[in-house]
Length: 105
Image 1 (cartoon, rainbow, N blue to C red):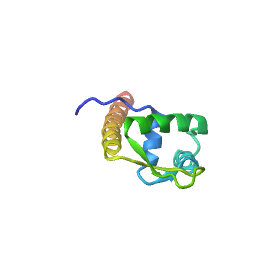
Image 2 (cartoon, rainbow, N blue to C red):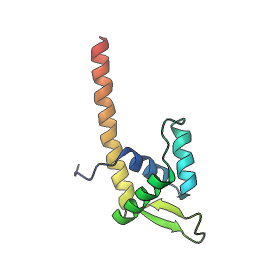
Image 3 (cartoon, helix red, strand yellow):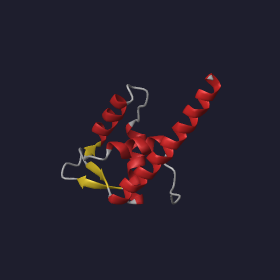
């Protein structure tokens, strides 16, 4: 696996939300609902991250016809980056689960 920039948790959540075209409010709602309120990303943070993801070429403006409801979507490169990060996170969870099981035994 080639080493890419590791995503912050907020970047990961936003990219995961953009596997389908979504606008900012829908992204924030999806993340909050999916995490049962444990994770919330405010508009300022979200739009800062969206700008960074656009600049990286990991997402693109899918529909900008309504300036107040711009929708974004992952690019092919963005899908690759998200997939690589997901695999890394799975290994991280596996390590923690293994370690916790050993403590219990």
